[in-house]
Amino acid sequence: MIAALSLALASVVAMPAGKLDDGRAVERYVLTNARGHQVSLLTIGGAIDAIRMPDRHGRLANVVLALPSPADYAERTNFGSIVGRYANRISQGGFTIDGHRYALSPDPTATILHGGKDGFSERIWKAEPCRTAGCSAVTLRLTSPDGDGGFPGTLEVAVTYSLSADDTLRIDYRATTDKPTVLNLTNHSYFNLAGADSGSADGQTIQILASHYTPADEHRLPTGEFRSVAGTVFDLRTPVAIGTRVNRDDPQLRAAHGFDHNFVLDGPKGDIPALAAVAHDPASGRTLRLYTTEPGLQFYTANGFDGGMTGADGTLLRQGAGFALETEHFPDSPHHPDFPTTVLRPGAVFHSTTLYRFGVDDAR
Image (cartoon, rainbow, N blue to C red; front, side):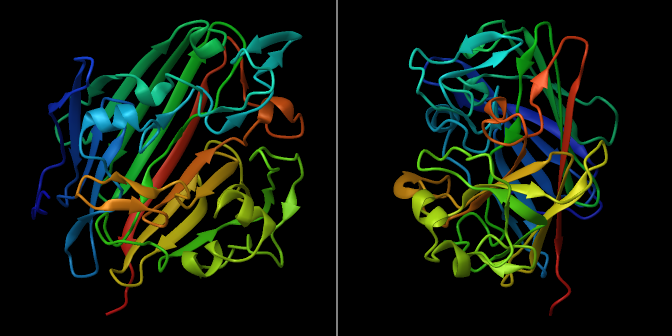
């Protein structure tokens, strides 16, 4: 852990992080703000491997789950990383644009998750740190060629991470294409506001500002319904402890073994990020306020963690060790015309912004 510094200068520092099994070198970029608080990320998948924020007594801890080495991020795809070309699920083995079908799998019944094999989380991104004195930002760039993973169009992607003096991590996504395509980008970090080595996050509270969600079928695909959260376990409009809901007897929770659902956000849609969710750890006092320009938020309670994976601190990762808040468009949107479109056309610029604002409560 890097200790907090008083009167620190904001900066971005690059350093070697190691190599993958195939010999590719990975760099780490550490963003430090004027308070000495930090965000660390890797060029493999743009994975965030540390967000060091203080508790109510000023003690720093990493509030995202991390893996031991860059090779682990290449093997455990999507962990903490940029997800694309299409975050979440696409059914029917592909999709159709303007009457032309694009196959993402030879199996027309397949469900493609998070862009499929060799998605964006497995790539080495080119990093461009900011050069202005006192700044704390880095832009990662990737060219995804036409036909990459079955998706049409050469896609130029830029993702900028910046850390401000008020402890806000901002992620800006931009992309252009030379052919009509579909695009859905997100970050797949797992948060534990008590600290990555603290055990279960079930005692932490979550609030999601959504009056509806999109229920899923037995294949974890949306049915197309916009279902009201009122009177259900999905009503998270007021803060609730995660553990008091995740184990409730509900058909949707049983099928997913916890929360793994898209919430239809109530906030205004546009270029200005709106408040979407608030998380709080009563023990440490740490808070996270999430703002986004995206219409949906996938809330995932790490249901697949079974103790078979070890975190960077040596602890076994089990269900409840953290939770993901994936700001994105809705799953399987190409097959649901009533969902917000994910089609990107030549001449248009995809732009999405998500803010993670960290703080502490005023309890003493």
